[in-house]
Image (tube, rainbow over all chains, first blue to last red; front, side):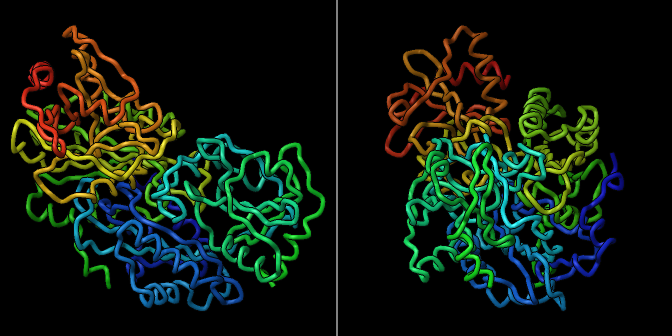
Length: 289
Length: 289
C-alpha cells in the first residue's frame, strides 16, 4: 500500500477545522504534519521521551507551571536535556495563537540519533507542540468505570513520570468499547491498584481522601497534585498509600482525576453504585471554580 | 532552536554512504528521511508498535523467516494488523537492492490515529524499513560485560515480543561508556536474570545449556531460538528456567546472543574471568558456519 492510501488524522482534522489544529516541531511550523518527523527520532525508535497534555480554557493554560515542572522532572530522570522553559512557553504561545480553548500536547523526545539503544552525547531534544480541539463536553456529572484486565509492570525507575512507553495503557483502553464506560481502573502485576488508564484514582475511606502512592508505576498527575493540595487546604485528611481492589469496593466515594477532564466522580463500577459524592463535589468547587 | 540547527543521522549517513542508507515508509522512498513520519503516528505518540533488526550477509537475510514470524506474533499480541508477508518481503528487497551486507531494521507501528490511548478500528499500520551499514567487525573473539543497575519491569503481557517501549534498555546502555565493555546483563525488579541490554544470555552449568525463560520480561531473540535448536541437534541438554546472578557467577561458560553479532562468548564480567568456551565454540561452528 502506498503512502497516499492512508490518511493522516492531522490532515483530516486540519481540513475540518484548521484553526484548532496547529503544531510546531522544534519551533517551526511544518508544511505537512503527515511528513514532519525524522524516522530516526528516538521517540519513534524506542519511546525515548516524555509528554504533557494540558487544558487551554478561557484563554488560559491550566496548571501550566505544574505541567512544565513535571516535564522537567521527567527529563532529569531520563537524562534528556530539558528544553528551556522560555522556549516551551514560546512554542505554546505559537500553537495557541488567539485560541481560547483546546488541548495542548507537548512531546519532548531525546532527539535524532544513530541506531542503538545507547543515547549519543549532546543530542538536541525534539519538541513537538500541538493544539488539539477541546474535549467533548461531559455527558453527565458522574461516570461509569470498569476494571481492566491489562496489568501495569512495576519499575520504580519509570514510575511517576509521563514517558512515551505507553503500550500498557493502549492495551487497557482497547479492552472495552462501551461509550457509557468512561474509564478503566488498572492494577499492577502484583494486584495493587495504580490508576485509571488516563487518570489517577482517589477513594474516600472514613472521611480520609486516599490515593495510590505510585511508588512502582503510574503517572503522578498534575490534577492529582492539585486535588491533594486542595484537600489539605480544606482540612480533609489525605493519604498516599498502597491500595487494593477491595479498598475501592468499600469506599464511600471514588473519583478519577485528569488534567483535561478534571475531577470525575464515579457512580458505577461494574455492579457497584455510589449515589453521593460530597468530597468530590467540595474539591471540584475549589479546583474547577 | 530551529529545525535546521539539528542534523538527522540519516542525512549524515546518506551523505557519507548513500548506497548503505536507504529506507522506505509504507513502501515508498522518502525524499527526506528527516521529515518522513507523521507526528500523530502512534509509534511516536505511545511506542505503539514493534521492530525487527536483521543481518544481511553475503547477500542473504539471515533467519528471515524467524524474524517475520516473531514480528507477526508481536502484531497478534498487540492486535496490530500485521502487514502481509509479501509486502514486507518487497520492502526488504526494495531497501536491499544490490547490497550484499548490512543491517535491515523494520518498524511496524499501529499507524496514524487521533489523540488518545485507545486504538481506532481499522488503522493501517505504518511500515518503516531501512538498510543500515553492517556492524563493525568484532574486536576480539570474546567480550567483556558488566552488570547493569537498571532493572526490567515484569509484565507477561509484553514479555518476549520486540515492542517499541524500550526506555529500560536505553537507560541501561546509558550506564557505561567503556568501549571495552560490550554488553550489560539486566535483572528484573525481583532480581532475576533476564537478558543483556541488546541480546539474550546463556550459561553452561554441569554441561547443560541454560537460558532465562523470559516469562515476565525480555525479548525472545531469533538467535536465542537458533542456539536452542542447534544445541538440541548437537545433543547438548538445554533448559529454559529462572536464573539469578549467582547462576552466572558459578557458570562454566557465559555467552550473549544477538541476531546481528551472533554468539559472543564472555571472557570478563567485572572481576570474574572465563578462559575456555567450548560449548559456545561448538554452537558457533554450527550456526555461523
